[in-house]
Image (cartoon, helix red, strand yellow):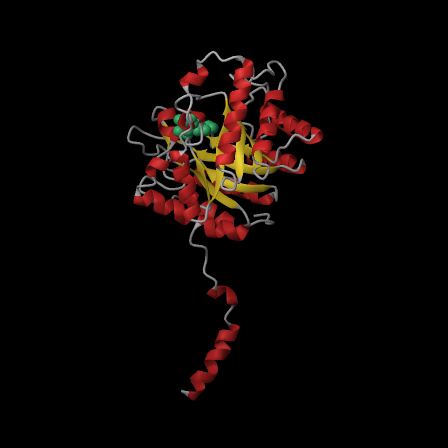
Length: 358
Ligand code: 9MR
């Protein structure tokens, strides 16, 4: 007895400390240690589903309303703002210690009919847009820490897209390239000087004409003192040959301009059959490797401060209807909320953390 009681402290002294440090049990625990945000798009109507709400709160420290802060939800009717759905997401996030990203204040697509077909003049549109940016950002001041101010303003060649805000008829800056984007960022900064302001874009993640144009936009804005804090790289991936090296190089060059980079809408869709099951089982392994590579590319750059997926369960994703059911299974959890191989690879890579060559 006496012998055993002497031995115990000795054994404890030599057992390596890491055996007592439990491994992270969720993405958000691992992300907190790595010093990065891990987030997801959220649909408020689903918060009443226990598995949805439980998984969201357990795994993520960042939430972004998938649609609830868009014009077509906030302003379905001309003259009143309806913040109810977006407020639900914000309340849920606050109750669970999550940050909130806002998406999006200016987008040429998916605007309510009264706006898109209202035949407003440029001065009217300018006034409406400034009012929108101001009222929405002030409503969420101190609650939404970062905003996608302008979404998808560029086409695949890097030219400014035709849109109601640019040139159809525009807010008075038609034909002046990114001047309307600049105006929106200046209004946003006036509305909430503390919020981080992002330009969010699709298919400009690797090195291509569009990402060159984003780079030029940011460089121009920085040089002239236009308030911009970051670039959102959406990363809706549908090719299993995704160019990770190009992504890493793009993140590096944007960070060198002083930008924060947020990965904002990550999903990796796979071919599925009519029942929604993956056609090639091995795709799930490749998908997991792509997710791992993206987390690695983000953590490798101190400028990359958030990794967010566009939903988290394959039960609910925009991919199904968008692809007419031929693609799916793009997210980290399956339709029964079970973690997939992609989940494990994201968790493992978050545990590796920053400053690693692995
Ligand atoms: O996933 C979103 C879907 O529910 C909406 O119907 C659609 C139109 O508002 O927008 C989808 O999200 C888009 C995001 O806002 C911007 N980048 C592309 C996303 C997928 O289309």
